[in-house]
Amino acid sequence: MAVDRPVAKPKESEQISQFQEALRRLNRNRMALVGLGIISLFVLCAALAPWIAPHDPTTTSLRHTLEGPSLQNPLGRDELGRDNLSRILYGARISLSIGLISVAIGTLVGIPIGAISGYYGGKTDLLVQRLIDIMLAFPGILLAIVIVSTLGVGLPNVMIAVGIVSIPIYVRLVRGSVLSIKEQEYVSAARALGSSDRRIIFRHILPNCLGPIIVQSTLQIATAILWAAGLGFLGLGAQPPTPEWGTMLSRGRVYLRVAPHVTTFPGLAIVLSVLGFNLLGDGLRDALDPRLKR
Amino acid sequence: MWQYIVRRLLLTIPVLIGVSLLVFSMVRLIPGDPATAIAGVHATPEFIEQIREEYGLDKPLHIQYSIFMGNLLRGDLGVSARTGRPVTTEIWDTFPNTVELTVASMVIASLIGIGAGVISATKRNSIFDNSSMLVALFGVSIPVFWLGLMLMLLFAVILGWFPATGRGTISHLILPAITLGTASAAIIARMTRSSMLEVLHRDFIITARAKGLREQIVVYKHALKNALIPVVTIIGLQLGTLLGGAVLTETVFAWPGVGRLMVDSIMARDYPVVQGAVLLLALTFVFVNLFVDILYSFLDPRIRYE
Image 1 (cartoon, one colour):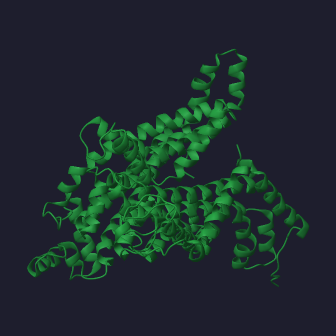
Image 2 (cartoon, chains in turn brown, purple):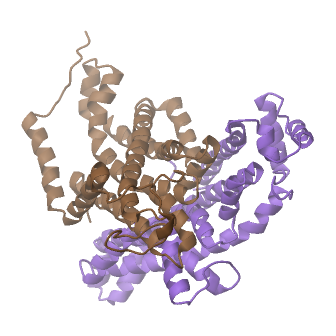
Image 3 (cartoon, chains in turn red, yellow):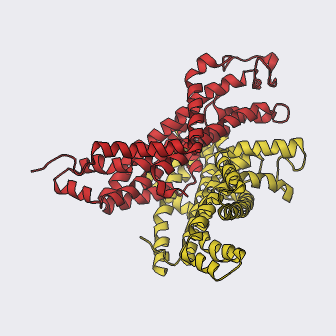
């Protein structure tokens, strides 16, 4: 008779203490907290943009084009006289969405494929690994460029492209974790008790791969923001007048000599947000797997 | 070891077929008529028909693929819709410039990355260590195109030390190479530091110190030699970052390379050139990775294919 219930489950108090231990380590990591602070700031900017932005991000003013920073426009105006600060605040919404949606695509597709590939092995694994090899034969941003130029330019396609490019990263990561976890005793015990493969994968194996997945996803959001900004810079991403940071930079670079503020500030926004996710990702890695810390 | 190399070579074959399939599919997945996509939006109806026949675009996909592969193996990638010149000519004219930029960036990234990594590891927790790791963290967080623009603003526009765009002299190369190499230098520095820290705690280092060897010999001859093995792999893998980043760097500095050619061709919907450029960049990446893997098996004979 198949007994379909979790086995060798640690006591609840142990689970909590493990989680608390990781939180405590994260809390002691100053750089990670700085990262978390930066991310919180950008999340707040994105959420409150309509209320805190001093001007409408798309309203042009041709009499005030390329004006430098002033009290009224703390970060100056762009080539069409739009307020830079307002556009950067609204841009946070776009960049964070790109990061989150593309990571969602990568995890939703990559994790199950990696788990199945690692768990079943054999021909399935061989086929999946060769497909992943092919995707990894392209430098990441190049593959994203290929996908966007095939699907057509625009923000939704950028999210899809960046998401697709991150799939192999998750497949490799989860496959590797599954390969080591599936040999553990508690998995054999679950199998001996008659748990279905699906239950073993989703209840026993995947929860134990969560640490590396969380770390990778945090770092992947940073990469996604960078790639999406790159695509925007090349003219393949969000189209004007959408206030996307990469697109803003691309339009502003023509005026680098006369109005460097148009390129400087959106770039700083990209650097800060990416830095925030990188700091937090590094901190999470140290907190979730202290053996890796050097 | 030879068994490993043969297996590694055999594994490259499906990858090459996959790359060719992906590049082949590109034009066919673009919404609209593939013949028009290949011939260009401004082509005459007669020329579009000629392309349709030449590429077998009215035939089943497997026949189209065999025509594509036949042409590819003969080095025929079609004709640019913009210039009318063969795609191979367009690409071969620009490829050496991309190689020049990529190699220069890789040299800069390796020198700075390994140097900073070694000093950081030997002076752990010092001001140099902390500040260089902070700079490295910024290095991987800066978008390559923005860094390029900022360097251009400072060193070309304000200080006038280097030309802002173009190619020709060594001074044209410096800003684009630093721009492209920065992120890789940061990654190499972090890898070198962590690899050195691991090696510096091994028994043979303690033995070397116990023998009374000078610290410089211990660090550079004993430790660095062993710590470099994983660093070599990272440097090889960085080529992907560099080739991808080259597309953006070339666009910023108007560097006449394959990346810029590809971006210009995407904008002009010149798909034969886009296909050719993508194919060349991917093949370069595949073969460099192959080379790095084989080199790695020589550097560390313990490595075997799983």
